[in-house]
Length: 495
Image (cartoon, rainbow, N blue to C red):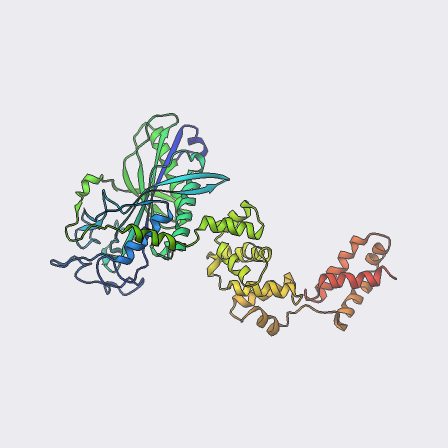
């Protein structure tokens, strides 16, 4: 393997991404079977999605509409006339022996998506957005890796076969250089947010409703032609998209340095090692023997309907970030931190629930981000809601608790002990007011540290911090530090 920085002195990477989005329609693409995830294997099937002789498909109008919305959000031109085609190849998880897809006449073409990485904007051009059906799912049993090699036998679940699938294909993206892995990740991240904003898919990569094929090639710096590309299939996390690009760049550089040639093939990505391994030689379009689907009429969306769908588009993520950045008065860098942490929506909801933008950011990017990282989970799956974070911030602002106590309250909320206010009440975590107990703690701190008192009285006022710390320790953090400091100043400096 070649060192990453070293390879960039000799080679220029070119990336390309093919992203598959399972649409969240109620029924499959060409039949009425349900699309619910996690059902018992082979319970959502019928003669159409199983490819039985004599069965006839009917296109799902909701899937066509969702595809047009994705195309519009990506700035694509919606074709006034397109049609389905048969993509012929035999896999055991394709019961018909072909996949109904689109080939030379896709529904959406010529779009783009701008992404920002390290303060620079990269334009990723979209070649096409087309509609097809998903395959079934193979389960290889008995092996150590979950792949067919070494397995005792294989099972097939056809529940997924026929679910509407949108494929978004970019044109080659040269010029990313050292940031090629980060640009690839940023593109898939932004695309996922757009699809999520449109409400046409849950885009859950861990469930396979968003999958990415990563294409990468290297060419010698200054060479007029691009190198041979490989396609790493079905990468299923944002982090893995970045890792797959980086690994393939290093691997291909080693191949080229040895005087060998890169083989055009599909490759598998291994999450545990961050490496790729050879899959199969990559077919060209002619190998699939595409021909028009004879059982489906062409798609010819009415221009007025397209404009109606355009008017229905929600605020897209880039516009939303620009608006919120202005409303919250934060920098572009801070907005990038929020987006990269997956905290933007959570902060927005927390502000809507009554917290200040600064308080909301502090909690979601600070203590909660740390807890999510330690638990190996997403921020939104921690078990605390934006409304509860806003309530927690409100208790601090009101002086009911302080930051230290707030962390104990948060422990209780995450443990399922109720709302922040209920945890404060149940555990007696409210800040101690200027009570007899606090007066006694202040007096005890003064009596126990005459040397510190002498320093303060001689002009070393900063030494007062030691007395404040002593009181806070005695009260187990329940006293208000500002109140304690004021009480100490009144007693020590006035005596």
